[in-house]
Image 1 (cartoon, rainbow, N blue to C red):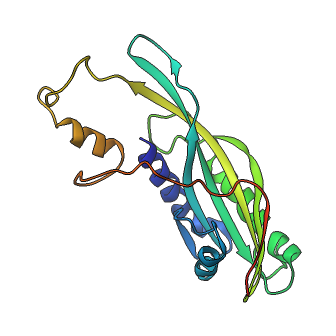
Image 2: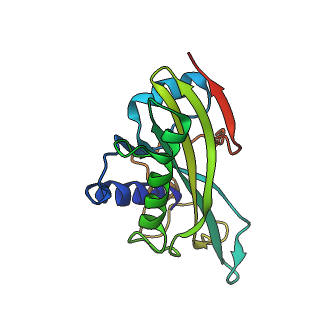
Length: 203
């Protein structure tokens, strides 16, 4: 479900691009674009843009003996660049959109939406500054639009070791839930993006 929600957020934002009144070069899943100087330098060509990432979940709340409600959090990291100043990168300058405008528009596009999935409608958790930096092409401002939803988590039959009766195997079920194709392997190792305001300096 987590992978499905992430993709549904991306699809929602992509479908709304014609409504924004300004271009976004990138709407994609987050892949460490803002974790360091080198990563950021490679991401500059995709600005202005938005990247979606799952940021964690809280302890599931029991809803019965074999069911829980899992609250999940997501973030849309938005970035804008302006050749003039950091303030212009944040606020825009009348010709180039700023990070503030992108973040506010994305928040409004997503809150209250269930994205066609069996989830609680997305609720806002706030907008936070993530990074401020000066790249060779100009100052860059990056913000994090944070959102929360919830969905049902249901236990499989107790002691299940064989394929589900009349259905796919357990690895196939897990792969489908994760939004994967042919199930091969899964790594749970992930370094979360920076959550505090940082100052990066690149040439």
